[in-house]
Length: 474
Ligand code: BES
Ligand code: ZN
Ligand code: ZN
Image (tube, rainbow, N blue to C red):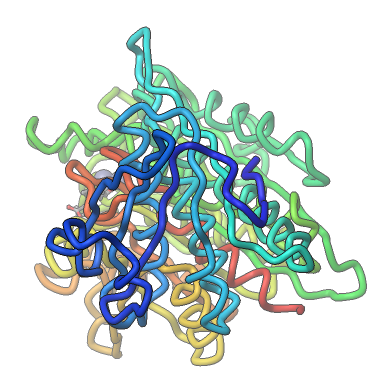
């Protein structure tokens, strides 16, 4: 828990300066030679009585929430790398700009700066104990409540990252489901795990079709949070949970197989978000559905040319067995609408390599068929300090996934792979407002782009989905 105080009580502190900050003049001249407040510039300064101060530059203007996260994370990470045990951060510059989002982002960044990916080695660096100072007495309670809210969100991010970072052999579909159930146990979320025989009885044949490629059977987690019983609206959050994607018979080349253990990042994000919503008792109703399986080679695997059925009754021509995510999401999405009665559908998945070619590792792709829904999401991801880019779609794209022998095919043409993958899922959303997030580029970073990230899983999507669902009913 971050402490909140008026006066700094620690030997090491962090303060932030704008480039045109009048307080810069109070710094010793020698320091001013090294430091002028340029964005993310960091300089250590010795103070009286053996105290240390880390100065961090804020640049001239900050117009993006991601920058606030970055500033706070830079401070914490710099101290952590020096193995400093406790530190106090001056948060005055974050309280006075009149926007409440700022403080949320700063708290998120500060806690994320402390994150270490779990390793299978014996020793890890210890997190820094944090204190925020510069808070007037009458505001301490408000700041504490922001911290408390964001601690739940970051716990969701940590969970998502830890799941995605787990080696495939330590996280089979059923392990993933059980870890989620265990994680949300302390909240009011109602959980069900549908096992293979139940999936068969229900007719989730597309999920089964992919999942039966492995000796580790598929399953599906259903999580219900009802924070607003007066409303009949339920948001459906559907996340891809492929714990290992070899490509199946359309086998991935060896050098692109390393990332395959992170193919359940969408499912992990949805679990992290619903946890935070429930933990913070947000007045909203959400059902999260995570179809889980492996995509492997075995006698029971799908083959290119196969035709399978789906929960919705549509038949699917399998053209490429590596396009498995859309198959399992199709079933989960129509299950969410038909059986769980969700009023809108958000799906999130590490779905296409095409989105990585197009937008790289810091921007997620969005495909959406409802203006109001998209606007709410845009507001949410901006206040969450994440980046997304909406992609267009037209009738010609829909034609690309028409099949001559089945109702739909699981592969488009050579181009617009992110759009056609999205539209495949849309065909199973039963005309409900639909928003699709492709996080294949953003869920994982080999070299972190921002200091609130670490090598490996990023927890992409958690904060934006949390914001989307928490703004709704307030
Ligand atoms: N899980 C992959 C997408 C992916 C690629 C995630 C890179 C993370 C990093 C997905 O199942 C997949 O294999 N997609 C194929 C689809 C293609 C066969 C139409 C792809 O994008 O290459
Ligand atoms: Zn695949
Ligand atoms: Zn995949």
